[in-house]
Image 1 (cartoon, rainbow, N blue to C red):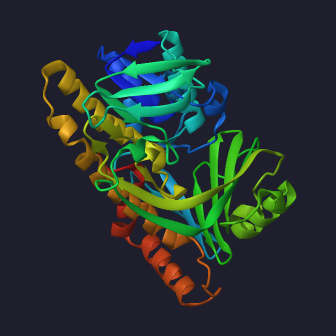
Image 2 (cartoon, helix red, strand yellow):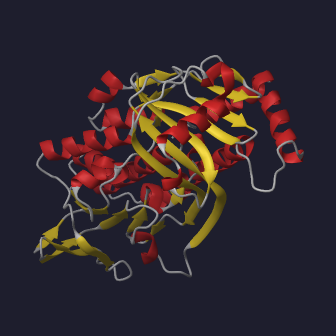
Length: 394
């Protein structure tokens, strides 16, 4: 079977689904190929902090109703060190903006439901997906779908297939540049149906490492602790996790933490990764296919949203007027914002984590404490953190 469309998208995560939804609003046709089943994509536990720009673009896509109803608006975070929690307010520090707690899983569900309601679901469980025709000017996607060959001919291919996807490899090696920093630790995360310890997130710097108190709803909590990069999840039964978390948060916060059985437990590696350029001829990269950030700054999903914002603008201009300037500038516009988010996430990670080789009370630890003390006592430093955390403008 052969299909003809304007934009062929690889990957039905938030980036691919959002792009297709926004293009559809403008009468631009698209087809999505996804190698996994819908249930697999829908069940992935990911980020939960949405910048205001991301909220706005989801509303523009017509999927903001449940987000507006269930999302939790936050206008500050806690920064804890030496056992004391310090609040940094976003509005108080002159950003005038907020963030919204709403899980990436929920964003994905909303977008999937929107596609289903217009009778244009992705081709789930598409096997052996490959790209052809980029160099020749005749782009197409090919796969095996339900046991039969499927070809999708198009004008543009967009790779929203994540860090391990195939799309980035279609950019010639003499053109593609990659930059990577792998951190020597990971985040052990637990999701549990227990009341969050705080109405706002708390980022905690402890002498044993980093911990984060987060949430997904008023009755569902997401907690993280720093662990070794090669740690096994089997070494962390619930009891050990809760004991460690409470210890790291100390008497002020730890004594208030409710515990319960985990409904999800996972270890996320931390890395910074950027691929340049994000466009090669008729192929575009978006989201994790082009860049990965440590979760410390809550930027991954939000960067994907800004990528899609820039790409949608360019495609609307092209299909409505034939103008190519938006598409030509896509890579540079996206990367300018990506590198600023990479910088912020790198800074926040280095500020709050314990690195191998650092003595408990050594130079590195002391410098971190000095910078944290400066941060919570300087209006300009707090304003800078708030500006970056709520998200730089698209």
